[in-house]
Length: 318
Image (cartoon, rainbow, N blue to C red; front, top):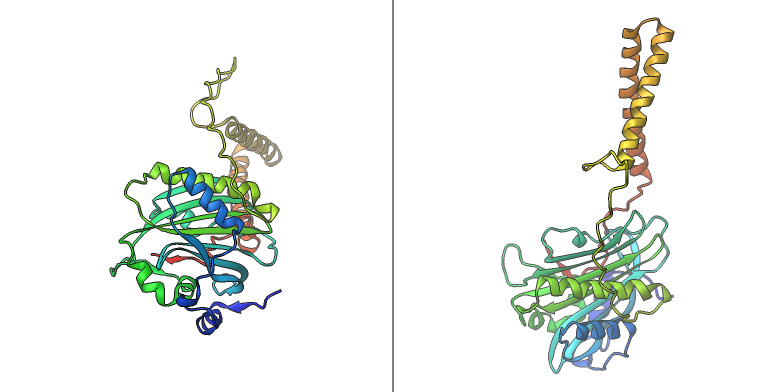
């Protein structure tokens, strides 16, 4: 297994290693599954990716300082002659986790142009985002993340000035023990609608979700669009309506029944209704408080839903 390196050590190793400068990074990358996946789905959505992919940072294990997790990543560049038209970053965990990995913060950020959340539970996540960013000098300008600056080397400045606006795509799929991130940075296109962006993200996420556990990625046919479901007739005798579900109504009626039962028993044992009422008031307050405190402590010490974790990003954006 390759040695784990902090990202600042990785920077020094890559910047001074032979073949790390732009002039010597010309050998095309093998047709790795991630590249074939991106090319296939981009073509499916008329998203033209011109050029040939090569490797900027070969598969490398590093430690992410914020999360304290070892990840293995690869950074690719789409080259068209002397121009770099896109960056692609893939990363996954080295060691299996125990409690899930959470979703990237970008999956829930309001600044994202598009969001796709195909499923998200306390342990399993499949989400994606697309966000328009600019590297032009300004108060809210994005900047290339460390890994991208390392990989681009002397090409970094020329790359960020290629376009005024960029689209930063990202997809994460994870379960309790493993995760996979795919991030793509492309010049923004005025003819690409929000709907088109979301369709591209959904198609990418569907293929990644279908193949990532096999150890290799591949494009699969997009899922069929769900047919519009006919409204179901209300069952005969159905009395509960509005926004409350049947489950919520069952909870309410059960709580009422338990309260009445406790009040009657307390009143009989105390000999008067006033004492029974005081007892049931205290019990309802203390029981609710203890339940909430117990839930808070469990969520703090052994959280059911992991906190958002970003690991290595292509772009640092506010």
